[in-house]
Image (tube, rainbow, N blue to C red; front, side):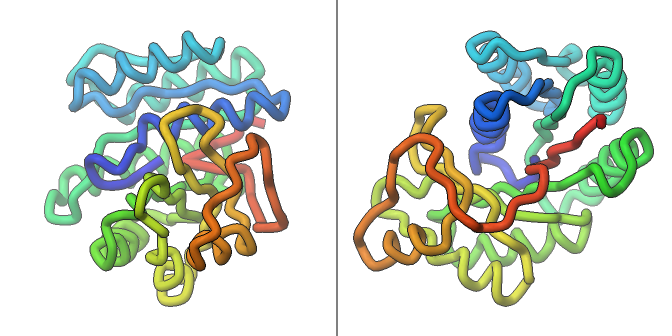
Length: 222
C-alpha cells in the first residue's frame, strides 16, 4: 500500500487483510511505516483483532529491512498473501520515493514481479489533488491499482473517473466507513449509482465484475 500521509493506508491494510481472510487466505501484514511510531502499533492491534500475523521492527528501523524480514517470515510460514503498510510519501522528498522503489524491488526479487502488486490509496475527498498524487506516485513506482477511501459522508469519489481515464489505473477497492466490513471490490455499477445519489450498498462481501488481481502492495509468496 502506498500513498501520501493521511489517506488511510494503515486502516486500508487491515480492511484488505480482513477481506482476504474472509476468502480463506492466510495473510501476513508488514508494518513498514517506521517513521510514524503509532503506525506499527496500530497495525499490530489490527492484526491481533483479526487473528493474523504481523511483522514489525522498532520505530526508525530500515523499512526495506522490515519488508525483507516480513517476506522471509511469510514464505517460512506458508502464507498466501502479504500486505505491506508504507510511510506516507511526498514526491518532493526524493529519498522517500527512492526508499519506496527499494521496497518494491525487494518484493519483486523475493516473489517474482508477476506476484507483486502496488496499490495506491487515494482519499476520495481530495479532489483534483488526488489525480496529481496518482500521477506522481505512478511515475515513481509501478502502481497496479487504486483503493479509494473515505467514500462515506458527502464524498462521492468522482475523482475515480479522471484517475482511470487519464492515468489508466484501475480502481480495485473502495472503503466507505470505519468498520472492517466497510470495504468492497470496486463495482462500476454501484459506483455510478452512488455518484447519482443512490449511495453505496453496505452489504458485506458484495462484489462485482470489476477486475481484480491479487490486491496489493499486495504480494503473494506463492
